[in-house]
Length: 173
Image (cartoon, rainbow, N blue to C red; front, side):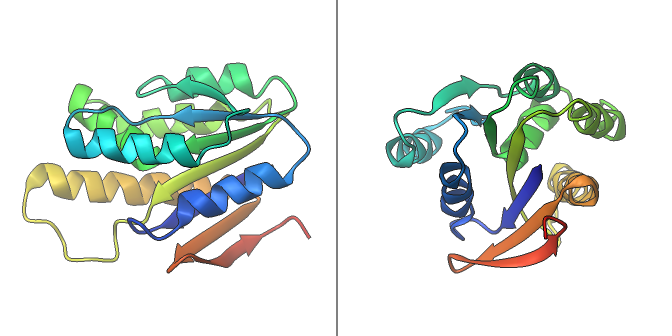
């Protein structure tokens, strides 16, 4: 099963995703995509570490997410990816001229032999003001495309606002 949990910054999406991951009987692997490039991000990472159950296995994956998912989805477990938006940011920073459509296809294809429950966390960044800078606009555009592509294949899509989840799609019933 694939679940996509969307929301704005500090909307509660990671907490909701963690609750979903903890609700199952399977072991959980947490795939972290963040990199501590500054003190503020280091503090955010520390906050997530503190709130994550200690029995969860951690896999840090700032760039090669498709490869990690191909490996991890071979076994029955719950995989929580937090977050796709930071992974996309890392991709834009490291490989700004790459074919993002091909990158997203690779990510989706990595889930084809899926024996796991996969929960993706992503920011919905397209609800605000259109950014002025070219790189910022590219980020918003690519994040929107990535979220749409994953929402299409997801069994369940939740939108979180003010800590409350709203089901946008639920094919699990």
